[in-house]
Length: 126
Image (cartoon, rainbow, N blue to C red; front, side):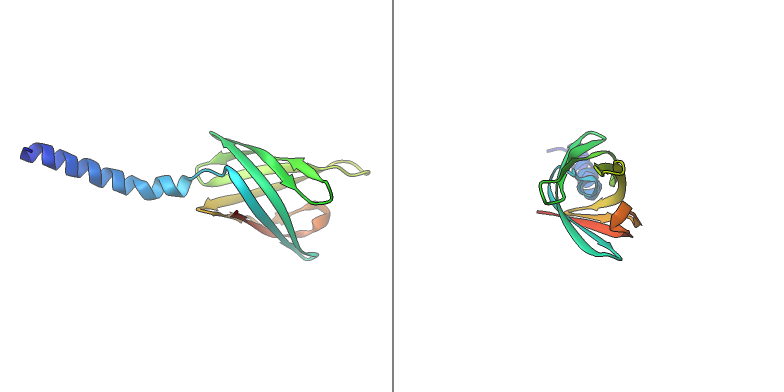
């Protein structure tokens, strides 16, 4: 192999390895997750199934007691935002979530989660 070809091959390999951490950091949210919501009312655990299609985020969150809600949101690089709408006799209650994907963890931003209270959340891939 010539010196030019070897240099070009080495440069391509270094560029590919340099891009690997960014590709791994971006990741894909698709899959089964366990969410933990920590508020002044305590810790609530939900089961989530996220489906990412490009920058769109869908799926379902199982609140327990046969309460399964649709997820509607977006993904921008490692940032994600979504809403679930909890039905209530006094009117549906939208709950907004924002967070950042970090491998097999989503670090949620602090927020106000309707009658669950204010606090923060996180999720772990199952």
